[in-house]
Every structure is written in structure tokens, then in C-alpha cells.
Image (cartoon, rainbow, N blue to C red; front, side, top):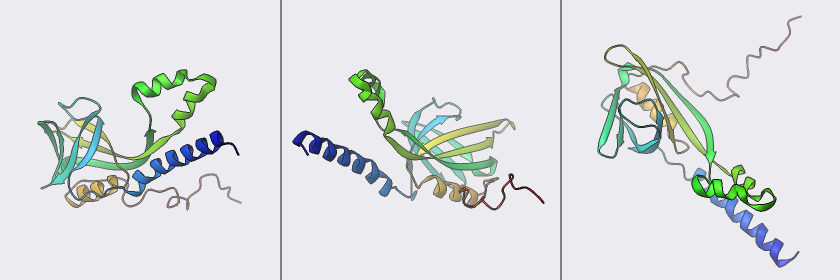
Length: 175
């Protein structure tokens, strides 16, 4: 094995190690959680970064000096999910696409895991709204449990993993 190929292997190994460590250090929601509000809250721009917390029957999203609150009692549905996002993005991700021999496309394969929290709620006038948040792995379920404990409703109680839903299979034929 040449020195160059050994260096490449060590570099790739370190990159994968760097991607695994944040997943292992997933924080639990004991207070405000750093989130990105993708869309949905009134008066808050899309893709706004801020903190999310559940206190006194309210879901609080604080972005800079502005804040937005949703009453837990007005929440009709809370859904959590798991997703992933590009690790290398922005200008570097776009410029790397010009790397020779398709080398830049390899960067799009590196993804980091995130949790999603979707909240469907009614405003004071009865209008239906929804908000979508992304956050570190392991925090969405904790926030969902806190919301349900303080009066929010959900149509998907408990764990919604595919293994839990494997009992019913629509493709089974009846004799």
C-alpha cells in the first residue's frame, strides 16, 4: 500500500468518525433546544434558527429578540420523524460539484441525522396552522412527550417505528 492511499484511507476514516460522534452525543431536551423552524409560525421567517422549549402549557420558539408561542391545548397533532441533511452544504457544497472526475458528488453522500417535529394547531380565530422544526437526534420525542403531558393531542401515540407496525400487512392474501 502506498503512502498516498494510506493517507486517503485514514482521511476517510476520520471523516466517518466525525459524522458518527454528533449522533452519539445527541442531547436530551431538559431545557431549550436549538432548532431550525422550517416553516409555519406566524411572524417568523422560514429557516429561522432559534430555541424551542415547552413551559407552562406553551410551546415557545425564540428567534433573536422575537418569540412565538403556541398553546399546548390548541395543538391538534404532534408528529415526530427522523431525517437527514447534507453535512457539507452552502457555497462549499456547490463549488465542490465542479471537482474533476465527479469527486464533488461524493460530498453529497455525507449526511447527518436529524429529528423533525411537526405541530398542527388552531389559532384564536379557529384557523388551522402547522409548523415544522428540525433538531438534533433524540430531542423530538422528548418535546412531543412534554407537549402531550401539557394538553396537546396526537394521532400517533407511542413509538412509530416500522417494526411496531409490521403486524398488519395489506399484501397478505386470504385463502
